[in-house]
Image 1 (cartoon, one colour):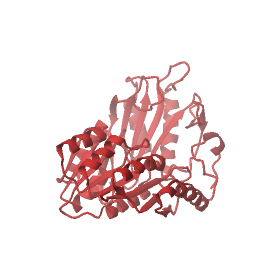
Image 2: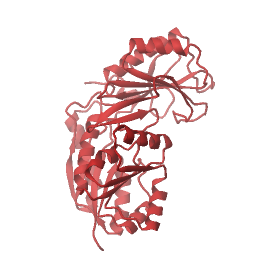
Image 3: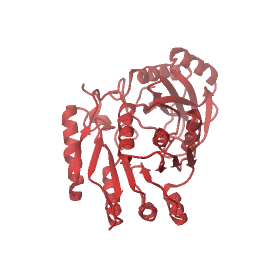
Image 4: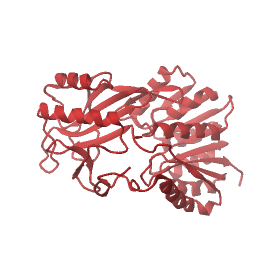
Length: 377
């Protein structure tokens, strides 16, 4: 498949390259990144069909009501009618929204003049359940005609189960604000993953590639090699996906998440799945770990899945004091993972294997998993 706007958009660095060549290019680069550790770097787990995998899409509209993605490092919109990474339902909904925006004469936000109503549209898809959440990011809480607008959208697009107004009045590149108003539905959708159901709201962290996420989480469970008497700490836990999937294998799971909405979703997800041996804390992962180390609490294993910035030295020093037998480190940026691994090595944690999952086909990004085991220095 060929992308018509790849030279303008810049989001998918490898979109015009054969997929197997993409995987080899990534492997060569990331294998070299871990070279100094002298460990086994396994081949990348790719996709059978590396298209239409994104379940989270953010687009903007121009004054002609054309939707698209921003040109790299600019506010200029590259109009698209079809992105190879978005599924057909996403584009169908975007086309209907385009018609409705015109019909209701919704003004498009102008960044230079700082005027207009509609700033962005966020679409989240629950692939297994075929549910869609539509988030309209706007500059004002008053949306005249919103009831009729919503009725028309859900009539044409029955997969849309909720429509949310996100009111963002700030002059910032951050798309979503904390202020929301539910226009239709419950304000969230529900997806199925690894046999459990998960509530997904506008601001929840949820892996964008459902197929690869399933494989990655299965690998995490395998690497943990837990016993039913184990207590596991799941840090940077998001809406609780890994911890909830793991809960049936162990005695107890503790989840830690800083984002308040994700934390609330995690609690609801535990209730929805009737999982009683998991408890969540709404705290910064590093501060929580420092407190656990001060209290000298015992954990058999720790899962860490930090953002691209990676973890912190303080977090790793807390691991040193707690001394869990295993740490499974999931990373969306191997560069920061490698930086952190050097700190883990100083405190006696070693690893032998690196596993890669192509969570983001056609881009330069990769997801890596490593199990660190404690070995007395």
